[in-house]
Length: 88
Image 1 (cartoon, rainbow, N blue to C red):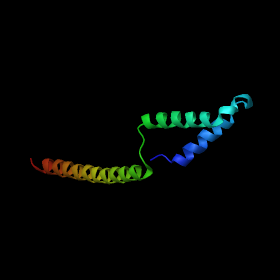
Image 2 (cartoon, one colour):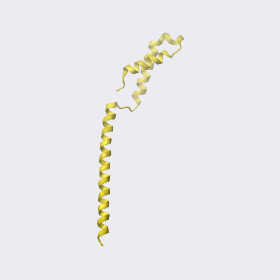
Image 3 (cartoon, rainbow, N blue to C red):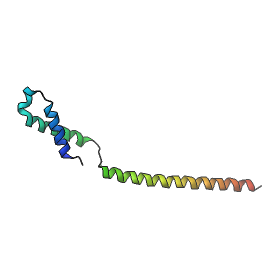
């Protein structure tokens, strides 16, 4: 999930960038910035770090299995080639 405290901080920093003459509605601007940021981030296809790490581990195990199968196929092909060469 997105850390709302970081979102609040970013909205606050954005509202501080607004010219002084417009800062009368600073709270309203800050809420608007926060809403826009939440909506924008909500449209992104994001995952948590934990979900990412789990998928990374699954991918690593899959890669290891694939490498083992590729080695096994190479060994079988090599044995078949050697066996075919001795049959005349």
